[in-house]
Length: 386
Image 1 (spheres, rainbow, N blue to C red):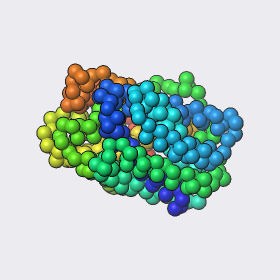
Image 2: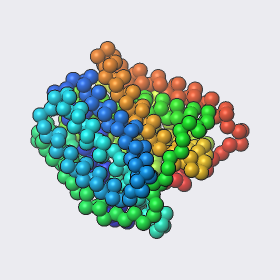
Image 3: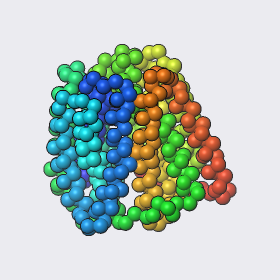
């Protein structure tokens, strides 16, 4: 159990440096907002493409998941120092494509091996996975201090160390049970109307979060004057709120329908984005970050609940894969590029305000989707999946 837990810890420790600070790193290279938006969209593009292609390759050539994980982990670590190079836009684009192509498939492979381990030996997945959140919190807090020591080199050095430490752990993980990634993927053309509508709902919800994901750290630093060392605290608050809701979800929402939970989450998203466009002081952002528990964690659990109902049998793997590709890939690509195009006209506050209107469309889609379900439809409690 400790090997899997530490693998998640180090993977998300690297993520704790990458997610909050990558836009600031790009600004440190001298790129403007539009260039930062385009470069930030590389990662979601890779998420959209790389995992399905890798799953196809593993199945076609009957590759061992643990061996592929180890090879990708080595390449992930070896390509991290490329960010030390003096960056032009073209070179940074190339380096990002290469590096993220090795990094992004690691998550589904690691999760696949862990789920096999859990199912075989009876451990609790959530108790293993929570170490990843702890790793994220620690590095998100320390990342701001690294920027105070230097704009690029201390930050990339820490990121490289986290990546390098992952390699021996990945190589020690066994793969004695055939992974879900090893199974052939279902044909996407077999999706029915409700499944397509649900993916549209996921897309709209994720699209509304694009300005936050891209510009929150920059907004804190450049418009509210928050020091680098404190930026990680704002991400920490969001992650802690998320962990608390995941832990207490069963008590909070045990009687609620998954559609009601998703609707509540979309309303919380509207409020969070609208008030983000109006804030004048850092402490106001601090309070709004607490809503992350409801705008992300509750929606995630309710949507997993609905996937269990909507995608049956072998389609379940396809459904989870499509939700990931749409939420972290397609919506992020479109959202980040739209942010880059619109920011010169709207500003960051204007982007937050415009994004607050998107959940209204999602709510309309949610209501229509609910009307297609039978009146007595009541899926299992999503808390059971934690």
